[in-house]
Image 1 (spheres, rainbow, N blue to C red):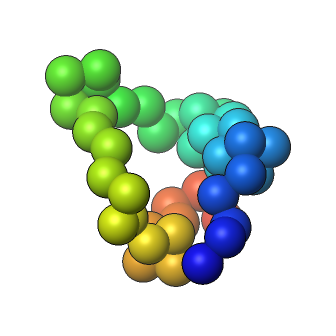
Image 2: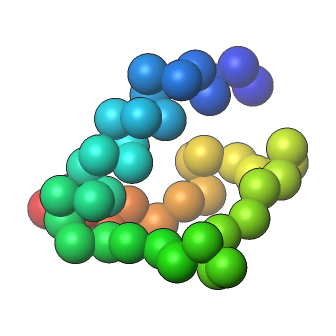
Image 3: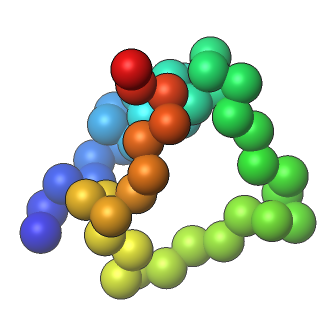
Amino acid sequence: FCIDNGAMIAQAGWEMFRAGHVTALEDSWITQRYRTDEVEVTWRI
């Protein structure tokens, strides 16, 4: 899959922030095997 460009990541982060979803730095992590189609989208109705 090639769906992780910077603009898409920034937009998703902005939408999450606007919806009140924040993650403390110590609770954040990264993995190359994280699938974006498995992410729970809580900021959309």
